[in-house]
Image 1 (cartoon, rainbow, N blue to C red):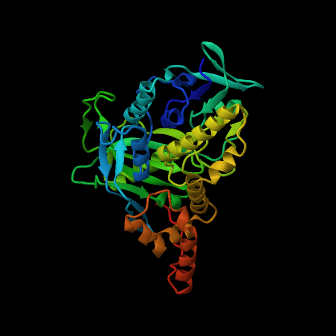
Image 2 (cartoon, one colour):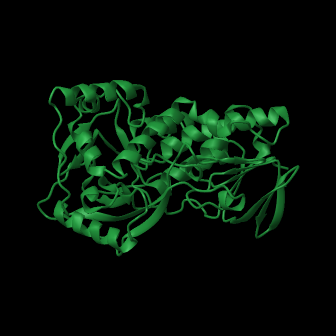
Image 3 (cartoon, rainbow, N blue to C red):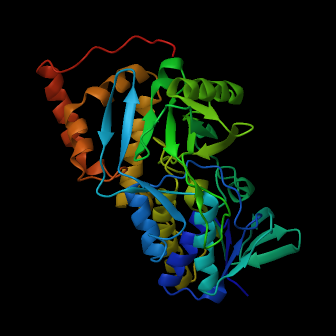
Length: 410
């Protein structure tokens, strides 16, 4: 009988299983439960940072380059009415259709000998003294541990009363360029003008490698498509307002929507305050939280799952159903420190004085130099915290600070 139930077969659940196997956990001790059948549609921008691509490559070496890695970009661009600048990473950013990518990751888990139960919805999780009960339509089943990898509003966290942090809202649709408009397919565009309209977040324009037959080895893509959407990083705007903003944004950018409707979904952001463990249960991936600044999900999911697998292996070896300092221990890791850095930036940019910090973002000379250098990876700037702070203080003292722009509706 499996000892560990992984609830959720997306990147977090698959990464946890693959890392656990690398640590010596027997495949027969794991079972993955997911309510969907893969490949399943997945709302997501589909772009991975360079770091995310490298982490996926470590898990599934034959995936990149692979037929599911349909496109790549060379850089990110941050833009607002205040200015714009390029962000160059140490390598390209890959774009996937998430249904195809997630299916390939889960297939690697199956190929490794782990039981995967698809179309199996978990209705409740009930921790007990010696085991944790998972309830599905098939009935109750007991496990030593349950890993919640079931996303922003997952049943695992709700069942064991682990309170959520900030849950934001995103909307997105597929668009095509208007005749005569030629967007840059090598660029991931992040536009922070929603802040000027009181929406604490950003809009995006990403090339989209839409497959004609998701999951097939001979998949070909539909060229010239893009995903446009908006992220409300605090969940304060109504869905309809976000949809209207997205269509207006698309029109200004020279795109027309080809999706019948603009879809939306929640995102749960990582916080150093969030609890992610009770006896017999741990959270990983978006169930714990993703990058609170730009909503990057896959790279944090893999990093958290690697940590979670290691800590759970220690608990199994010790015969324990508790993991002391599970949350604090992650905060001390490099990925944990970087997520804390991203949280601080999000708290500033999406907080009480967003225009002040938007001004800082687009005028901070050392930050702009780092962005252009091509020596860094997005989401890994914590090591630069104090140099960034002191360099900006010096910039202000020497007259290099620009006044904060007035709030203007877009």
